[in-house]
Image (tube, rainbow, N blue to C red; front, side, top):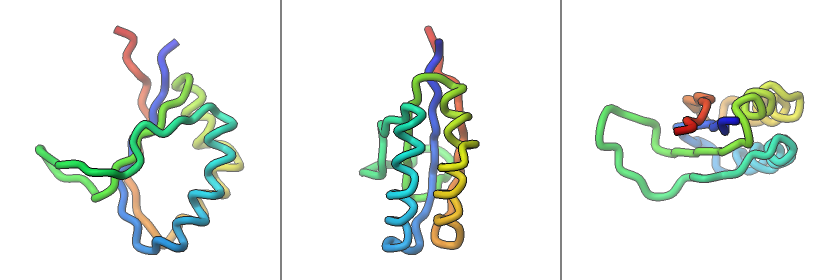
Length: 97
């Protein structure tokens, strides 16, 4: 079964407020097997454009990644992020090569 991934590029405008979102999203991510592979850090955009922060979260399956986003817990956490950050998020199925 292919893993699933959340790949996000974002910008945080209120660092203190963002901490409440991070605390609230921990439980739904853990419940669905989410594991951070990238969480900010150094980067260089070499083609196109992207918001300044990159996050990649791995899930045990594509379905788990979709289910986590749709879960009540994550949707409640997401409300805490409204107005304090922006994000482009894609949920993708991994490749089993």
